[in-house]
Image (cartoon, rainbow, N blue to C red):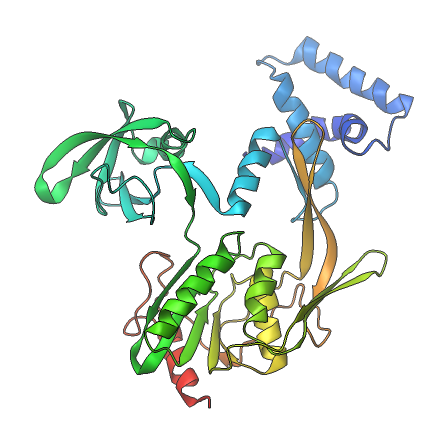
Length: 386
């Protein structure tokens, strides 16, 4: 949802303080506030020349109230936005199981990957195909968001796609049955010298199982050293990153969080860990859960960090569902590395600082040593660790 900041900071701020409090936190019901709300509403009703969307006004009131905390990580979501947020954090959705992007050459929607277990392949779709119509409606860059929403839908329902396959110079239609799909968040490959490379895009519910599968596959291929790429990983779920970190570090404290009352909650690792040379790739967009993992690896001394200083998001948010199906995300605590360091606003400094010269952020097209200087350094470093 796009927020008009001028609109928020103008007339609606006054409305925010009264109505949103009553409906969200129930702490503020003074008569003066109610009278002011009625006065503002009367001015708008009598003078505003445009159409008034009452539901949107309400949403902006709630958004503005939480924005008054002046915390960039706390915000309100209406019912539809909240439901989509929960789906994303679960790491699954109902759809045809493809990843798409806009082809800059012609602004068409190009399929860049097909998820394992999806119905796209059986419907005749291939990587490189372009979606030019969804249910008969032409689609391209101009209505990309609407196109993606239209492709998604209810489980076991069908969607008709018109596909352009340029290498065969043909256009055809196909129907794809939608199903529940786990979004790929982990990708990996075996490099030379028995070095495994695993990229974690974010930490969702599905990520731990995907990481474990990828790790075990690389072990079967002969992996003896490991590079984990957390560049541009914005974070995710604490319990997911804790489980992955537990596999990397020996027994001890992975992280702890402290709330506004001084209460501390600890996350521990057991004695079982991979016990192999390890390098973590990070950059300025490695944040939150990525910094939990990076900080633990650095404090335990079980691996080296290569790349650029991390983002510095050392606060924890919790999700609260409200009675009407909407929700708020609220910062509830700060987290600390095993050595008691809160990196919020500071970030974690890598052991080997390397500025990127050509980092490819396409999750489905893994970087190569020939073009990625940070990966080059990570390979060099991991080869020296005994």
